[in-house]
Length: 255
Image (cartoon, rainbow, N blue to C red; front, side, top):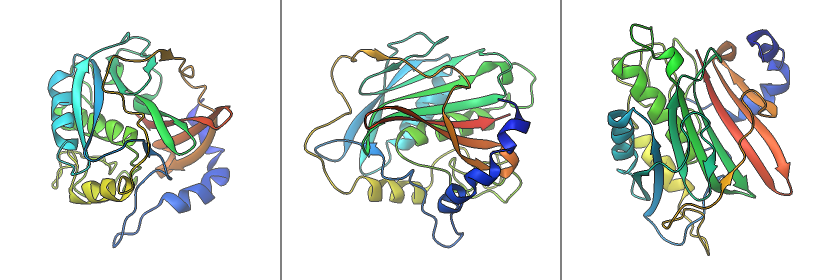
């Protein structure tokens, strides 16, 4: 979908965006009621490492594990980086030169009712190639941290590209190194995770054993209905009805 086509959806997305937009004084940036089902806190979520961005994924995993309610672990990749099909019960993380798609990174979550059942993060090396505008540690940290944050149930704190940095990777920015830096989560992100995961469930969708069967991912650009578009189209959220109570949400950062 071209940026012009995406912009044509602004009117449809306006109501959803108004629900997502946080105030400076009291931001709430959960993505609806969606969360991983689990029976105790802290729970462990496996990140399937299918990347050559090892140091950035390691930093992201360490950062999000500072939360009181969850820990993330880097696990052996269970899928192909080029296609990055999802795996039941965990988040697959991939990087590849996916081409001139227009997106820097994306995250997808599969949900059943209000529970996340699997997730995926992809970062597009086409835009991070040597010497490119985005080929900096700060940009890589921001994109990796933010996309993994989406798979935990978090939305954006702020998506205005040229606003002053909010000091969190869940804030989109033109200058991730800051100051303040937008390369890592902040205390508000951890507080929001506590709110999301306060209640306990009767079973778990975050598997600690061998990966389950791979699930079919929506084809690139076939992500369903656009439900949120921000800052002139730099970030977008789509939802695909997968039948029954199953949905797939796709969070996109556009170059």
